[in-house]
Length: 118
Image (cartoon, rainbow, N blue to C red):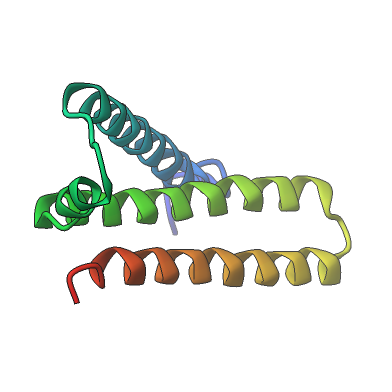
């Protein structure tokens, strides 16, 4: 027999909440970096853009940016779906379409980013 009381679902959303906050912080930081880079080192032509985007550290950070954006968007949309789409079939359908779209966005963005020098 357990002496402690069950918390039920009281701590269920903590992981999602933390992911939402950390992904939001990373997205904000990356956007600030990109904007500052544009002002400090202006890119004059396509070759400058390509050289900047072909650097491996930027590719890694941009991949993390796209992953964070995907996770952030999914968690936000999932919360809206759970709160406002009450029929289970509708919630599942919209969730599957959204998840597939977000996954396609992420795969496409990483493919474009890492195939630049190919």
